[in-house]
Length: 78
Image 1: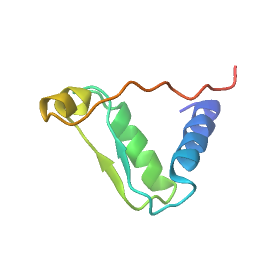
Image 2: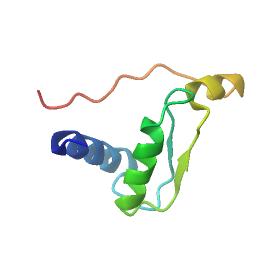
Image 3: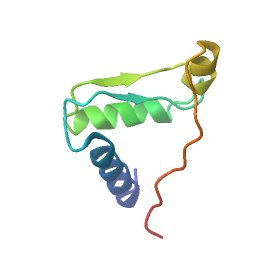
Image 4: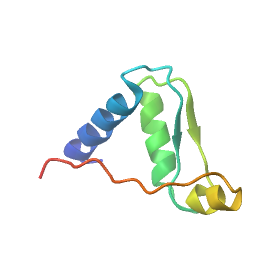
């Protein structure tokens, strides 16, 4: 992972969790996509203790009839 992308990811994770390493975080992307698995592993390497990965991704989330909403990514430095 490029250093600028890792910094972006780490800063976003800190912002989303308030820096609380025990705050639960769930990662998922599309079914059969491994980016979320890599993100979960990275969060564990930062010391987060309640890290969850949904391998079925957004496809599974919708199939399980979980609630959805449209979100906008945080802007990164250009």
